[in-house]
Figure 1 (spheres, rainbow, N blue to C red):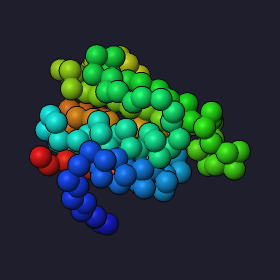
Figure 2 (cartoon, one colour):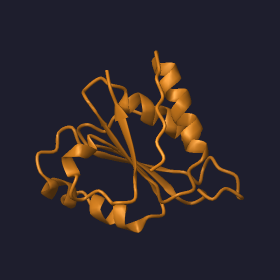
Figure 3 (tube, rainbow, N blue to C red):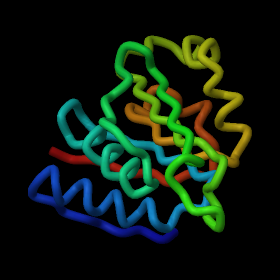
Length: 139
């Protein structure tokens, strides 16, 4: 297993690392984000979205659970991400895996062409695909 450790001292540093990671994504990746409240998960997703070319402000979808960002608008025709989506999922308010099924997350995870970042991924351990990128945040 290939592991890397990054230590950041600011939100800006966290976002820069996420931007760099985004540049290596091709589509089909699931990023499972683990960590306590305030550890930097949403900040990381903001940098990831910026690195993917998403325009506008990225806020955590805590109350709606899932936000979709089409990537086609901001990428060149040659990009492998052209016509794919970036999904930002925040499971903070989820009480059960059944709630996740109701929003269609299982189908999104099965599709394996888009990029999915899941905050509070520990809440759906049984649904997460085996093939994923685990990212742990520590305060």
